[in-house]
Amino acid sequence: MRKIFITLILMLSIFSIANAHPFKSEKELQDFYAKIDKEVDKELKKDYVKIFEQRKANLKEKATDDVTEKNLEDDEYLFILKNGKLEIVFKKEILNGKFRTLSRLYENGKKSRIVCLSAGNPAYYGTVKYFRENGTPLYSGQFYAGKMEGMYKEYYESGKILKEVHVSNDKENGPEKIYYENGKISSIKNYKDGKANGEYIEYYTNGKLKLKGSYKNGLRNGEFKTYLMNSKSAGSMFYKNGKEIKSTLTAYMKEDVFFNFPDEMEAQINIGDEKSKDLIKTMEEHGGYHMLGIDNYPNGRVMRVVPYNQQGLHDGEFRQYYESGQLAQKGSYKNGLGQGEYIWYYEEGSIRQKAFYKDDKIEGQVLWYFPSGKIAQTVNYVNGKREGELIEYYENGKIKEKRFYINDKEEGKSLFYDEKGNLTKTEIYKNGIKQ
Image (cartoon, rainbow, N blue to C red; front, side, top):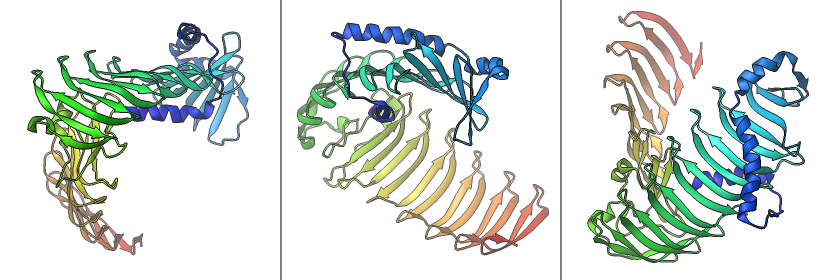
């Protein structure tokens, strides 16, 4: 989740200017934002694809250096097409010409984002809003003169708030609150000038306390007390400058979502996803510290769980998930290199592909499957390159294609068959080139 916040800051920082906002109070600042947001929301409700179609016969072309781009305008709007598809729309003037709006569109015509720009420079003002392709909000942030000043929010696909934190001068300041989708608090972390400082609390879905500790200059410090759902103590973790120095956790809690964080590395976990909690395990082996890198989908579900060792290299079993929460892939790393069996899954749960890795290179037979479980393709690899016969099958078990590889290049005869097993075509290859 923090990755989205950092990404938004980086994407918009190129528009930043040095001036702080001139308002004497937060209320004055919010009143200023409200005036801008009112005009932006008017544009948000408009169907730009429909407006463009209604006006295109009377639009004038504006010169551009981009050969893939076409700019068409009238007195009110500038429409920018990329490769013939409407991609960006400017409303030239709002609030008596002091500002303008910029909207980017998905291929389906819905807005992916909408922002307000100063007429005199490209600095952002008001609430910048990002959306999913289905139109539901993804995240938003308030800006003044190109710097984030105000509330930053992330949303579940349902539209309910996932996270909110106050930001000043592009840095988090105050409590960051993360919510379960039912609206109850999942965690509260306090920030000062962009670093976690002060009390940190996590809650179970029933509202009972799960963990309590504190941060200092962005690092865990002191005792982190943990509790079971019945409010009984589950032990503690003790930190010094972000490193765990002692643990008295119960066996149950060691298998929950509490991990060792070497230095400033910190995993961002969707605490509210019960399926994810079951799938994530502590990566502690032989007394060594492991850190989990965890990426989330916009709806908060875990996308990817990757373990790291103290040297910052992938180490241990990783898992990747579909947005539905179903397992998509699993495999293992050792000191940064892929090792052992890798398995890919269809979203409904059946195996899609199997491969074996040795020192980050595919080795041996790779198998592809139909969702029914029948083999779809077989091919052999040596030191990461295809070597030998590749056979592709129809789902009825009949051979569809036969190819032969030497050093990853197609060689000799390639044979093609219909579903009844009749040879339909032959191709000849030499050193990967069709003859």
